[in-house]
Structures are given as C-alpha cells and as structure tokens.
Image 1 (cartoon, rainbow over the protein chains, first blue to last red):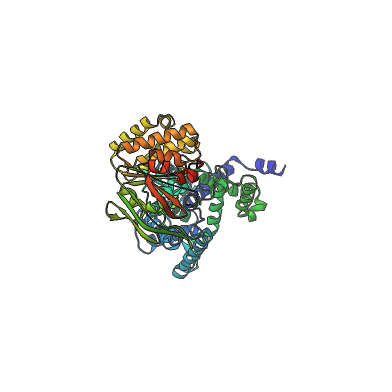
Image 2 (cartoon, rainbow over the protein chains, first blue to last red; image 1 turned 90 degrees about the vertical axis):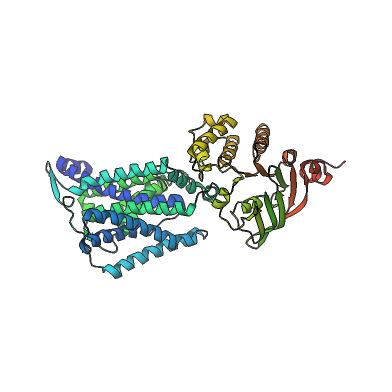
Length: 306
Length: 237
C-alpha cells in the first residue's frame, strides 16, 4: 500500500529525474566494478587498493587542471594513462612478489596498499575536501522538458557502454584477450603455451585501472568534493556489484553496478524516510545474493586453483 | 637432443628425483615408465621449466635450459602435453589450437597447421566453435595433442596421454604418437600403460622412487622378466 502511494505520488518528471540519477550512478559503479572482477578473474584476489586507485585518479585530474593548468581534455587522457601506470606499479610492488605465497598474504598486502594510498593522499593533499574543477558544458545543468540534469549524466552511460563493448572486444577477439582468459583458468599451462603471464597480469591491471580512471573523472564532475577517503564507500559497493553479478564475469559486474546504482537511488526516491539507509542497500543485496545465489547472477562455479 | 644429467628435484624436504640422467636422441620415441610417485611427471615439469631443480643439468642442443622460463623453453621447440589434458575449458576448440601457436607470428603457417590438425583429428573440426570444456575425454586429449603441435615442436613431451581413456581411443592416440614421430618430431612419453608405451618406444627408462632402475630398448624391456612382472602384469613362468 505504502509503495503504491509512493509511486502514485511521484510525477512522471520526477521519476525520470530519479532514473537519470540512478542510471548514471549505476554506470559509474559498473566501470569501477569491472576492475575488481577482472583482477579477481585472473589472480583470484580482491584488489582492495582499487577503490583508492579511483581516488588517486580524481586527484590526478584535479591537480592537472587546477595546479598545472593543462587543458581538461588533455588532463583526462593523462589521468587515464597515469592511473593505469599506478595500477601496474601496485601490482608489481605489492602483489607480484607474493605470486607463490598463500592467498591470504596477497589479500593482506592489498589492504596494506589501500591504506598506503589513502594515507599518502591524506599527507600530500590534506584531508580537506578539494573542489573538482568545473568542466565546460559537462558540469553545467541542462533542462530536458522539466528534468534538470547535469550534462555529464547523459555522457556517463554512453561512455560506460562504449568502454564495456571495447573491453569485451579485447577480451573475446584479440590474442591478448585470449591469453587473459587462458591465464584466468590455468596459468601454469598458459605458461607452457609461451604466454608471459606477468605481462598479461600487468595488462589486466592497466585496463582495470584505466576504466577506474574514466569512472573517477566522471565521478569528480558529478560529485565534486574530493577527499582521500572518497573511494572507500563506492569501492565497497562496486566490489559488491562484482559479487552480485558473479565475480570474474565482466558483463555480470556491469549488471551488478546498474542494479546497485539504480536500487540505491530509487529506494531513496520512493521511501524518503529510508534515505539514511541508502548505503545499506548494497550490503542487503550482498547478503541476499550470498544467501540465494552465491555464485552471483552470471557467475559460474569456481573451482579452487591448485 | 635432450640430455638430463644427475637431476635432483625436491618439493620442500622431499626429493622427488634423486639424481637421474636421461637422453632423448633426435627423431626417437623415448618412454619413461614407472609407478605413481616415481617422479615421471616431475621430470617433464622440470624440463619444461615449471619446477626448478635443486641440482643437475638439463641440456637441449648443447644449451643449458635449466634456468630458462617456460616461455623461453617453448621458443626452443619443446612442448608438453600435460597430465589430465588441461585444455582451456573456457576457450573454444579453435582458440585452444591458436593459443598453442601463441609465440608464432606467421599467420599463414598457423592457418595451415590448424587445417593439418583438423585433418589429423576430424572430430575436432566438427567442434571448432565449441568450448573445450564440453568435449569428451578422448576429444580433449586430441585437442591437447593438437594444441601442443601448434607450436611446431621439435620435442614433444606427453604426460600420461592414455589416462582415463577407452581402449579404442588409447589405440588411436598411440597411432597418432607414432605418426607425429614419423613426421620428424622427437617424443618423450611418460606412461603407466607400460605395454603400449614400450611397443612404440625406441628406448625406455624405468623409474622407481626418483631413480632410474633400468633402461633399454622398448623390445628388450618388453621381454625383461622383472619388468613383465612389475609393470606389464604378467606372471613369471
């Protein structure tokens, strides 16, 4: 009854407004979730530092524009490149030396890398929120038949889907992608085929981090308060999105991202009295999926790698 | 030609190979037979660079390959058909063959070799686009063989290619091993099916708990009373 009332009270315009917000938030979650799922697919580990890679990318873009006065479009390209490099450096320094160590050691190293990045950012950039610079047109509000949206919101889903298709093409139709899929199932035999698995793992981190950077830039334009801990909550939610979609599955991560983003926004829209619980939605989804379909929506049964 | 000398390999404190020497001359089929845990697979894995030996040497065409990565060993023309086949289940049959040619750049030669392998194993061509995980055991073994051949190896090592297969399929596999060898590829074959292995082998080694117990030509060992009793399941008269 309450739901019915909530729905009827809502005009078409405000519903459309919420949908736009939900889809753009979901797209951002999807982009970041892909990074979690790719790394898990290949190394069977949760890259806790991924959330902080997002945060660093925000700072890269922010300082590129404000401090170094690089044109914004150039800054975005440099940010994507620098973030990809950061991901590769983290993999080489924190994960690669532990390649033959027990899985728990790598996990702890990932938590360490995450803390290091957060505290480094806190030390270097201060804990005060910095304002992400306004980008011409993208930051401005536009009016679509009464729906007020920030221009970036219209780009976010398009960019996300474009990234997804490009990524699926790489994974499914290139030699490198074939090697990535092979390494994810059996890295020893991949090695016997002549695949340099360290390279493939580096490429995986570079791609995941580049997508995180694209997500981070759009995140910054949409939510311009940049702090050293901004990655923490979205990072958790994106990890959950990856689990909900079926960890290791790229399409699953995107679907999970949309479910979480849309769900979070629509719950607040329909039940304003629950708006304090918006962050809880992701965790409830996690519990439900672990309870009813632990492999995730598109996930397959994973057998432990020997 | 492959020369293994005094190879010692240990997992933790336990020695799986306690100093063994094996020669694999060009153009031959050499087989290693022995019970479970004798160290047969360990030897192949060490030659392939997947396990690092404690001491001893592995020489291939006068080059010490002991400290090379697998990737570089493959590029020298050595490959492995692993125990349990281990095709990539999430790749199609065609992709499994293509990844076998991962280090090759000659697209034309690769296309030709894929055709040749499909002639050798017509069943695989029918399943070209199927995921390798959906194949039967025998088909997977053929795919694993085909995948190994795609690197154009000079030396192909096979670890228990007959394991878990029906007798008719085993016969096929051994026929193909012979054909691979006749086309100029050296074969190092590890088998528990000693009878079949000794019949195709030019030379054979018997491994027992990390040491070479005896060696000889395939025919010699087939007629050796002790071998007959221990590995061929035939009683002494």
